[in-house]
Image (cartoon, rainbow, N blue to C red):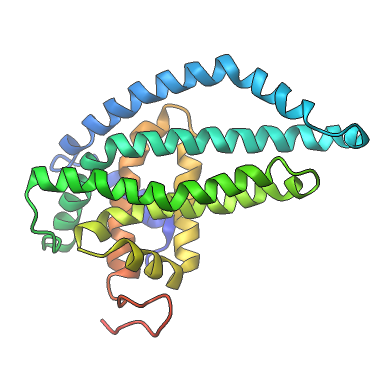
Length: 249
């Protein structure tokens, strides 16, 4: 079976071939504008946020400052990453949905099951992103609260990393599934049924998002890689994949 890294590298090469690269440049431009604005804001406020977090540490934990400080930096960095990812995905969703459709036609020789028109697909893509936000934000808020609880917050960076990998997988693997009329609940069940490929793919894409500027040009490849993962790992699973035996091919 296709592994996560192979899907990502193959997808990145694929989106810059002559037939597909025209679908890449608009989301890159949109993300570049958001990236510049958010980077400027974070660089201006990061020091104040960090000072505020360190002021919350009880005096009796001062001896652990050498450990707590880098943990706070990691947690804060992950929160910033979450915010950037959510905003850029919301903006780029209509473009990425179209890109996923074209990639599926290219690699499988057949179109997705989606029979919506271009305008309807774009509108529905924004609605789907709001559904994702409804799933992600409450869990993100819970982790944010945990990050402020003394002692428990020592585990926060690991929890953030695992959840980030899952959230990224949900974000990207949903594009080909939405194009193939897989409901959001069904999509989550399929991802859970293939938990290791899901987390490893999300982890690799997460690493890409941390590469300044380069991530803008690599993320469209993550969309194409998600199509490859969908075709190899998830397409054959039934609607109740998370709780029952997968359907046969």
